[in-house]
Image (tube, rainbow, N blue to C red; front, top):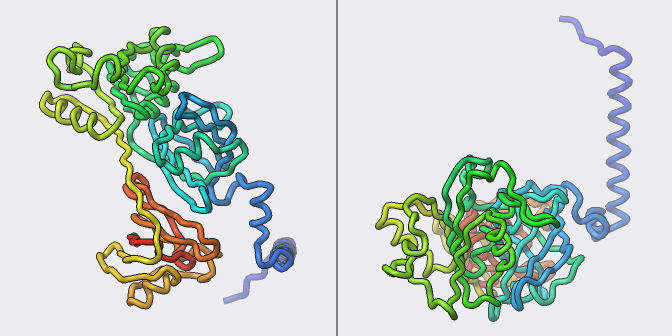
Length: 392
């Protein structure tokens, strides 16, 4: 066997590449030494927080009032935003009073040419995040962002222009994902509602329920769509028409929409309405697609019961990293640097709340985040802030 000798040109190129890597590594070490205890990326976050390859965030562009207690927040997402399908939602992480809170909100536009996204938030009584977003959030604010999720979307053939008869039933802020779908089907420009060729064969009825006309989010948008002939709007206000009884023989859904059996129904709203619709459609053998947002969050405390995916439980105090608590109990865990740098210890937090031991920030999990797989946390720098459940 003879030795293989690389041609001189290749040998020189390899040597140059090796020198380049050594120089780059040396520069990185110098930069890290100069910025210690922070990293160069920490300073980049100050000037380019939306750059590729970093944690996904978005910048608040504007806060546009919709009603006295609701507003549309327009966001510029980071470079790694993967886009969305109308009807999907996004989870937003925002720091309120030193605590990082995560909430899920429907996206209220289809894909936009300017690359921006929007959510519409209704401030609920005692709603820490919703009230902050509606009344106190200022343009320029940075929020944490997760990729869009959710399957409350139109059938692909319908979205692309197939013929269909649809019924949307919305109540309160449940109108938000439906508005995202409608805006995508019928874009709104400065000259009014546009009815593109792909939406020509759609027959859409919207039954929208709200406490009163002034409290009806997107009332003007729905009215404009109806005036343009894009939809047939049936607005039901509790103070004028009473609470909608889906099964009422004279004023129920079948009376409002006589050809109900010919339509595919999409519904979004509070649990009472959706439960009634599900029972009604099941009895009638009709198809129904629903989206529901349920309230319910864990109050952060000091320590709590730590539960793992296999059912193992262990008591954790509020000062010991979850990684250490788990390992002391004999539970195998992924790990790395143990300093919060390498992200080798990240696991989904399915339920509960944890505290970041570096800065005291609290991360809580809302029910929608839990159903979608949880919120990723670093177990090496997170301690229990109440009962919490880790997936692994």
